[in-house]
Image 1 (tube, rainbow, N blue to C red):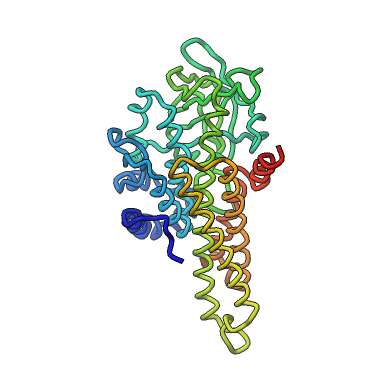
Image 2 (cartoon, rainbow, N blue to C red):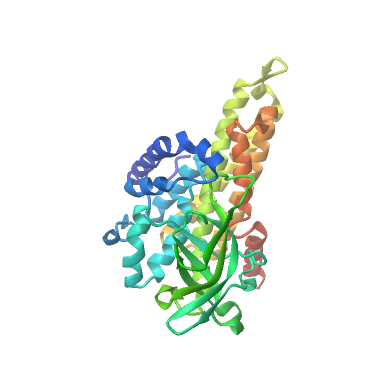
Length: 380
């Protein structure tokens, strides 16, 4: 069925994104996977192409377009290409809203031009060694010292952790405040006491620099408080719907791409004197995956449309996130199986996709947390 979500303008933007991937990303991606990081120049190249800060005002060098569907196009194309090592979605769709909606005019002038040009790479630091999906377990503290905060603590599994110039840190500013005693503090590259640990060795998304961050008596100026004092929990909850639907968009696109690759493979690969596609079991597998992708796509397109109109709620975003990412994981496993031994070889796209996609059900809120959110809404 023809999709009704996008206009000609969205499709023209898709062509720009595909050209960028073909010229700037895919030819070099294998080397970046070995390096464990993408080069800083790639961020600047994306900025020159207008792929950063799509929703940021033109006065700061952004695209000035609040239509989320452009972000969805970007997520789809990077999802299809399995180029998650370049965390452009994190930068645009997960961190961007914090800066555009919470930053003061002075902060916007200071940070947004670099955000859009690629001179400033961003990260958000929530997860700690003892606190993942449970934000109330955060131990990082910020003590009020009059004209600045003194920040102490550590974070882990931070995407863009090595490249980041600007890190939004979730810290406790009122120890007895519980979930409502946390604030967002912006830590910038070069601040004394801000240190980066090792670039973590993951099973997938090797070129995505994921690091440990350490804060040892970091003096954070009061002007770097982002949003309301002790308002972090509400701020985080407000922006999570977009994060989760963006992950879901990339997940479905990735699953569809794997299905395309595998459909072509089973037509060409022979076993027992005939193509694999001639076996009923293989046809059934393809039929099941195609149907699951089509049904998920229909629901997700509706979620994107709702979010573009400002109407997507946390429950449906959670439904989209857990279902789409579990689908991607399931499709990757079944497609690898249909590739047989070749699917286990890293030179085949299916092998990298299998490893890269596994984290999708974990970050942005685990599948279990998504189900808890949905269940509570139905049974409260």
